[in-house]
Length: 226
Image 1: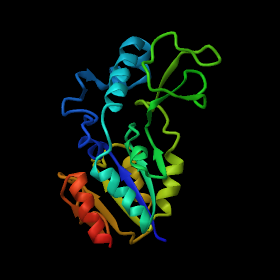
Image 2: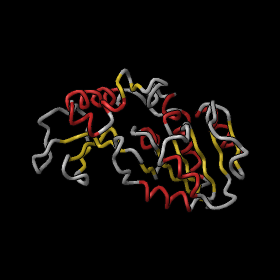
Image 3: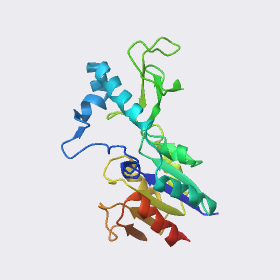
Image 4: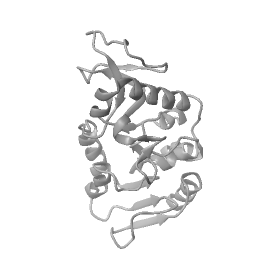
C-alpha cells in the first residue's frame, strides 16, 4: 500500500467555520499576533492570552469536520495515509483519520509551564491559578513564535517516506512547515489544493495544482488517484 502524506493548513478548516490564522494586517482576530502567540506576549499579559485561546477553544467545540476531512478518511481505504497538520484543531481526528501529527500544538490540550512533556486534555476555560502537578501555571499546548517545533523531526521522517504528497490549504510560506516539501524523494507526485496557489508547476517536478477549496478539491484528488 502506497504511503500518502498530507500536509494541511488553515484552508482545510476554514469551511468548518474556523477563522484562518491571520489577516493581511498581521492581526489575529483583532490582536497583534505577537500579543497572543509569543512567549513575550504571554509573559506581558497572561490573562489576555488565556482568554484568547479560551474563545478559540469554545469555537472549536461548536464546529464540525467538513467534506475535506472526511475525504482524507476515504483515502485510507486505498492508501497508508498520514496527516501532518499546521492546525491546532482536532477536526482530522474527529473525522476519523488514524495518523495525525500536529506541528503547532493542539488547542484542546494544555501543558505545564515548566515541563513541556506534562500535557493534559482540556476542553474547559483555562485561567490563572490552574496548575500542573508541580504547581506551575498551565498554558495552552500551542507552539508560539520563537519556540521550537518539537514535532518537526517526526514530520520530516514521515515526509521522507511519502510515495505521494498532498498539500491542502496552506500558503507554504510559513517555516519550518514550508520546508517539508523539500524532503520528499525525487520525482514524488505532489498535489497542491488551494484556491489561490502560492507555488508554480515550474518550481517542482511532478506537481499538480488543483485550484479549488479543500472540499471540492479533495473530491478531484480522489478521482485523480483512483
